[in-house]
Image 1 (cartoon, one colour):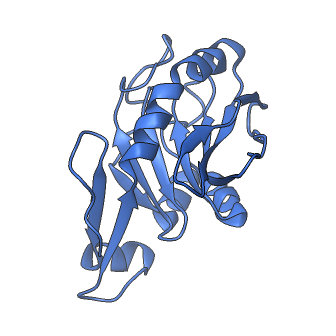
Image 2 (image 1 turned 120 degrees about the vertical axis):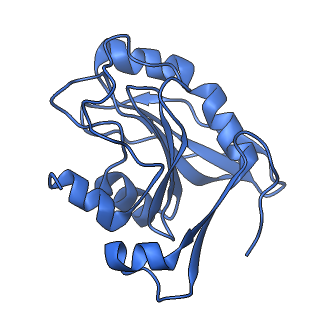
Length: 191
């Protein structure tokens, strides 16, 4: 297991399997599941999300892009593209870069739509493309989706990114710091 350097966005989560076994069946007793979030990726994503978040709230649309890395390790974010209310297809990176993660917003705040956590569709789509994901919410939360471990980790909470001025905390209930895929599925089903 690899440790991540320390810092506000440098996160390394070790989730004890004993806590997850009953919830998701990811590992047996005594085994640990670890999620590694590259600090350079998270910092860049956080930096570039202000303008797309504002557009997302004003137009009530998702905005999306890819986080891409070159063979030499250089990171870049593709141009953000406007999507619909329930989805977005980013432009693939070019010029020697490969997509390592998707980035998307969840649109404007709507008290009838739970949007403060990622969806299983977010995770399934990223997994099918072979990338991880970053999701920005109307409340200004930033999530990281580890598609191999099938875990969503909240990198920062309400107001850490630009928030929808109409956002009201609490409408989506208590939001945990991390969710397994099965826990997200249960949330979507109202559990």
